[in-house]
Length: 183
Image (cartoon, rainbow, N blue to C red; front, side):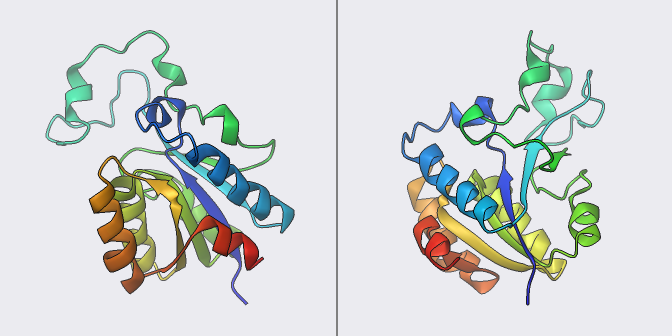
């Protein structure tokens, strides 16, 4: 029997604020509460960089503009998980340095050390962290479930195409309610 973990990715206050869906956090909280009630580990992945951002190459199209930009006051809080879905004491948090939850983090080590072989993915954005993590996790031979409404994207059509046409080739795609009802 597969040992699962619920992965909550890039649900940081600074990111959530750019995706105005008032139903998202309560729905995600429902998945988190169900996982905790069933003893399924909840693991948080957030993007973050060291002071001065030495991990960012100016050649990186997505993050490169940050390499030369001054760090705004309070930037050390940018990787904080939104308080509505914040980790409980003892829950694992990993910091990633690129788009995939595996990129530059110790996520793979944490999963393998805990014999986790099936990931349930949620996060912002569907076309970013979720897509990149699905692809990498599938290549690492993890079983996968994507909670379609546990993900958000700023382009509803891109979200639809990914969850209905792309992800089903590598993952089971369920809604939060379907996943919760199955546990």
